[in-house]
Image (cartoon, rainbow, N blue to C red; front, side, top):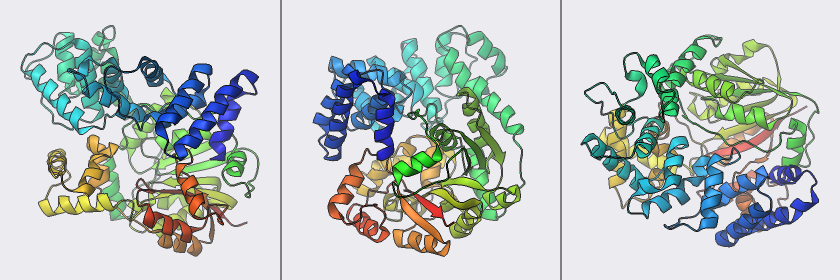
Amino acid sequence: MGEKKRRTQAAANGRRDDRPALALAEQARALLAQSAFAPALEHLMRALELAPHLDALWAQFGEVIRFFNFRHPLDERIRVLLERALEHPAVDPGELVRPITSTALSRDNAFAEPLLLRLMQDAIVRDARLQEVIGIERRRALAGAEIPLEALVALAHQCFNTEYLLDEAPLATQPKSPAEYALYAACRPLYTLPDAERIAAELAGTPLALLARRQILEPMQERRLAAAIPSMGEPKSAVSAAVREQYEANPYPRWIRTQTRFAAAPLAEIVRELFPSVAARPGAARILVAGCGTGQNAIATARRFADSAVLAVDLSLASLGYAKRKTDELGLSNITYRHADLLALGALGERFQLVEASGVLHHLEDALAGWRALAELVEAGGFMRIGLYSERGRRHVTHAREFIAARGFDATAQGIRQARAAILAAKDDALLAAVARSEDFYSLSGCRDLLFHVQELRFTLPQIAAMIETLGLQFLGFEFPDSGITASRYRALYPDDAALANLAYWHRFEEDHPETFARMYQFWVRKSG
């Protein structure tokens, strides 16, 4: 939590007139940690009214507003802040889904809500009711109903973002008007049209320009970029080959906008803020991101650590093409991409101050062997940031996978659609309902990664503690994206663990709070020396 606090203070840059806003933000953080959501939001709105130029306050706004359902008509103060948040680089648009969707669905016509139309452009809208409304609206359009072009374009953006999770319903005729192109794009990607590049040029000066760019030009660019990425050879095992095949077909995650972090800091400074008793070697850092997928983690890392040089590797060229496109789009020059199996990275012949492996080791045939191979690439005294699935935290996913296997749904697009429909229909099953609340449930690649992955391992904290001991590493602590809520609750129960690093305590905590690591365990370890 020290890092976020320092970033907030750094953002103010010592300006005396920002102190009242920062004080309100600090009070909002304390209230949120106590689950006092409404007072926290009020404090933060007042802070933003005083200092709307502070990026850190906008990031905090996203963290707070995501807990709220609203109804139409929306309070004008909140509407203005949501409008600004939708365009602000410090805000993850996914955090705005719940407040905006609830507002739109409380209207007679959800598509009359401008906030929703803007959100559908840049996010995957995870709401089963809205997904149903989208399906109805698309069927109306296909049946000839007159729908405003702005709504049709938003519909097309959302269908593409979710990879046509409802279904693909191509039109019989070649589109001619902007409305026909938008309707086609809501049923199939525009790149499936003959002479798609020419069509993109024709649409460049119309309200469909962004749609054409995302559905034609960007996929073409990804293929060109992927072909130019150096490769270190083929996968080292049959399991790795199967994982690569999955991500070539369904790169994950498909993201449009990522949250811009606050002012970057050197690795040594961030380590000291996260773990005050730990010292790191000062200076520029060489960082390895193993299993970078579509680049979200690698880009966040390159932005987070000042003076860093990042090498990001992945098995899937399709994912790497996506990552490289997003990296170029954001103007980042400190990331190099490489096509490789992480088990082959010893051939690089270099050592790193930090190795990140978030969400990759649990997709290996042998997670410990993969972790050992990466640990050998860490310099003495260096660090690893690891993400692993929790057995307890993913019990709803395990249950859903068993549910799917029992009914024989396969990992094809149609099989995924059928499985989703069956899960949504099982309204009395609390674990399946929890799966249906996941963002990944609302896109084709996300749902495949969540429920149909070809290889998934899960762990308990005692198992992780044993692996850390086997590898001779030192556990430093977890990172949580929840503004201190989890840490506050843990401290109240275990005040004698000042460092928040006792894995036996954390195991007990997770048994009592099984949702704590629903996404994954995200933690730091250090190599001796």
